Image 1 (cartoon, helix red, strand yellow):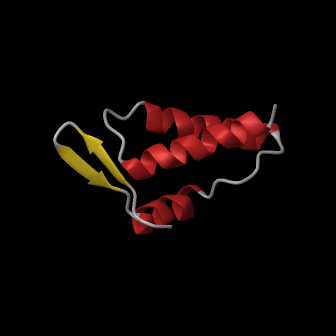
Image 2 (tube, one colour):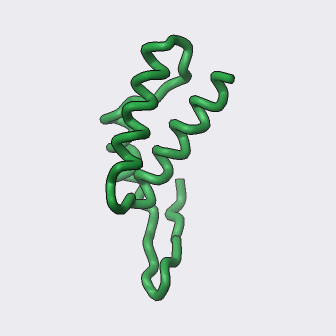
Image 3 (cartoon, helix red, strand yellow):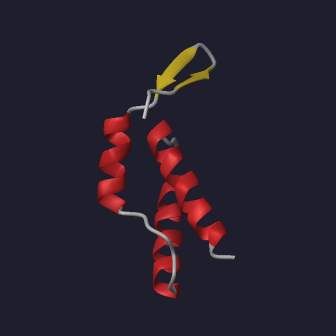
Length: 73
């Protein structure tokens, strides 16, 4: 995945694929097929949402979790 740049005010943030890969390896998100998996995804999303500031990689993980939960509907 190529680097993505996000501009916040005068500061430029760069998406780090290695960091994102580490987050994916740590949390191991996958398609949600059971209530237990759904609850786990909710818990991870809540953990991320309660942080004061998310990195681009954490934002991408949160978006992925939300998409996985949305596909459950």
